[in-house]
Image 1: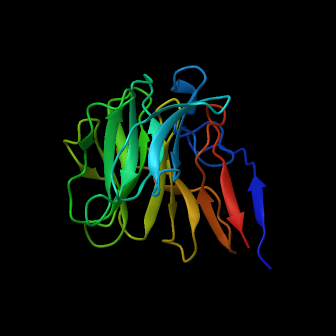
Image 2: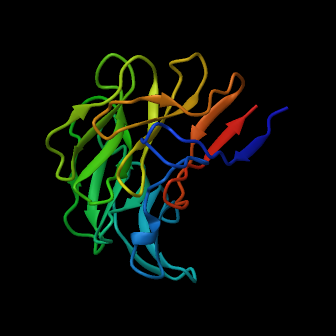
Length: 219
């Protein structure tokens, strides 16, 4: 029988984080314009990115493509939205302005790229990709340049930047089952913070308090 359990943990990681608790510290929905929500919906026949008010009124449709668009995440200044799209053969990270203009493919790689998360200053985006010897975590400038790999040695995915910019959380199976790791933004100090010898632990997209991580356990 499978159950989903929400766990809150508080630990000290040698200065990397003062407090760690349950999974994604970022995907900063709080930076969206007040009362505005970005979401992926299939009301027009396939998943597209939309904006709506917090009362459910649709403001605008941001994407128009017959392929799959999903996982929108606001930039910290509330002006842009990064999202995952399969409009290329493999799946890429795109960005679009909140008014629907300026659509751009940031990753432009034949491999699968996704799981975008903005740095708190809006200058960088962390994402996962299988472009080289297994899935890993990469970082790039917000305009798509300067791509750099941060992790190796397992299947790493679902990165999430902490709200204070000091750490990146991600899911990895490098120890035999999926666990939550944190590292510094330069890729150093990679640390397993869940150490669960059972089931699957993965990051979740939400916005907890600064210094906390929210994660899901399946067992």
